[in-house]
Image (cartoon, chains in turn yellow, orange):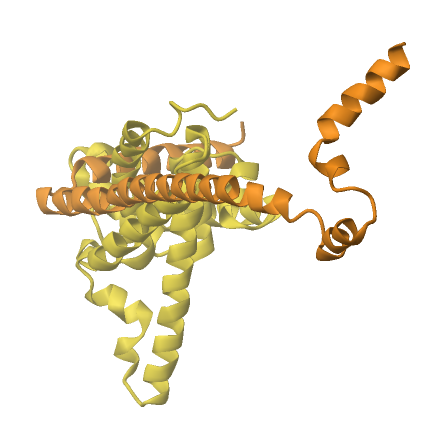
Length: 189
Length: 116
C-alpha cells in the first residue's frame, strides 16, 4: 500500500543517490562512452521522477532499471542506424561500433594480453578488465549479466526489467557466463 | 556443485566485486555531474508538486466561482420554473386573483375545516 512517507522528496533523493553511480557504470559498460552514459542516466532519473515518483519506493528500483535499459536499447538502435548510414555514405569500417570500442579509453585496458596483476583479482586493474570484458558482451547478455550478477535480481525480475521471457534471461545469462569464462581464463577464476 | 557451476559462481562474485570497485573509483568530476543530473531530475518533482498545487488552487477557485454562480442563478431558475404559458393561464383564469395572493390563508382555512 502506498503511504505518504514512501515517496517523499527525501526518499526518492536517497534512492537516486544510491543508484546513480551503479546506473552510470551500467550505461558506461553498455555504451563505452562516459558522456552518453551520463545523458542516459540523467534521462532515466528524469523519467523516474516525473512519471513514477508517486509509486511505492520498493517499485522504484525495477522501474528505474527498466527505464535505464530501455534508454540504452534506444541508444544502440540509433547507433545501428547511424552506422548503417555511415557505411552507405562510404565511410571506412573504422567508424563501426567495434572500432569505436578500439579507440575508447577502456580498450587501452585490453584484457587479452594482460598479465595477472600482483594483487590478483582484488586490484582496480582487474576490475577495469572485468568491465571491458562485460562491455564486449552482446547487449542483451550484458544486461542479463549485470542485472543477475551485480544487481542480484532473480530471473523473473530480470525478465520483467528486460522485457523478455524468463527463458531468454536464462539463455543470455548462461551465454554471458560462458563468454566471460573464456575471456577471463588467464585469471584462473 | 559442478566445476562449471563453481566457475560461474566465481565469475559472478568477482564481477560483482569488480563493478563495485569501479563505482568506488569514479572520479570527482563524474560524481559532480551525476549530482547535477540528480538535482535536475528532482527539480521536476518540485515543479510537479507546485503544478499540482496550482492545479488544486485553480480547481478550488473554479468550484468557488461555480458555487457563487449557482447561488446567484438559483432564484432566477426557481422563478422561471413556471413556463410563460402557465403564467398566461393564471392571468387569464376567471378565478379571483385573491385566491393566488392569499394562498396561505386558504390553505389554513382548508386545514381547519378538515380538523373540525
